[in-house]
Image 1 (cartoon, one colour):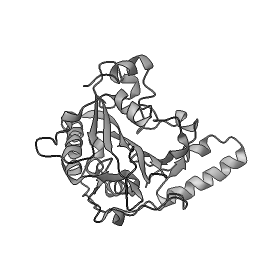
Image 2 (cartoon, one colour):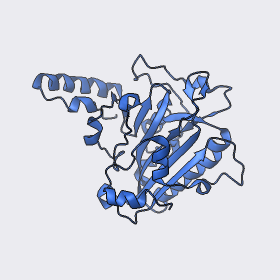
Image 3 (tube, helix red, strand yellow):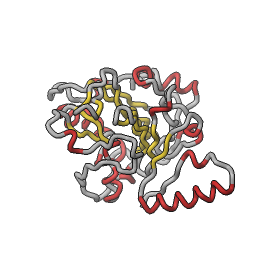
Image 4 (spheres, rainbow, N blue to C red):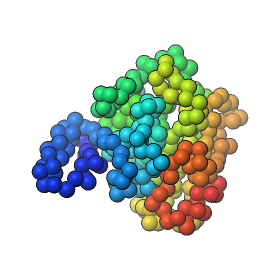
Length: 282
């Protein structure tokens, strides 16, 4: 069962309110989920295993609804009805015998004021329901895999991108974990400029991006240096062929992704190191 915490409640000091928070946390634990709104200050002290390199922030936190689960963290945009970003830790321990559940489902834990995105909205749209955090990277147990199929972790991609180019970067990460035994800290999302939508609900990303910070197994943000491999790619959400579906063709820099999205992404890495690893194509 997942452990659940409200980031905003951590910031409340009065004893009476803490008692209410404790009771609420127990209730949420029984539900198996946790979602909490981001505030401008709370994320700065809310780093977890999934946001080890820093909690991504942009200038406007009003469209960042924080979903925190044991399997990942999400900044969900209720205006676009998709994630701004998803962050997660990845190593060999997250892989295991669980089967892919193929159980796409709406996230009914989101506020009732949000538009409920259902899997059926994608039907006949021409777009795949593409995982941001891939299903294969959460096969340790059935629950881990099931949570990757919640719709906030899904965004529209063309079939050739989802099944080809995007998948090729997922396989690269799989190999780093299972063959090279590395520790990965990953953040990924979309760029939404044109704001085209599926059935006037789900916003289609113009491009999709992913950043993979590669460390030795067990290492954390303090081990990041100017020589740490950081792989970044930005892929146009279009049509790909066999000759163009290798993610390496779309390498870019972290800094370029930050400029496209407006998010500061590796915020807990010392600035002097950021200035090197964020401007290099690895």
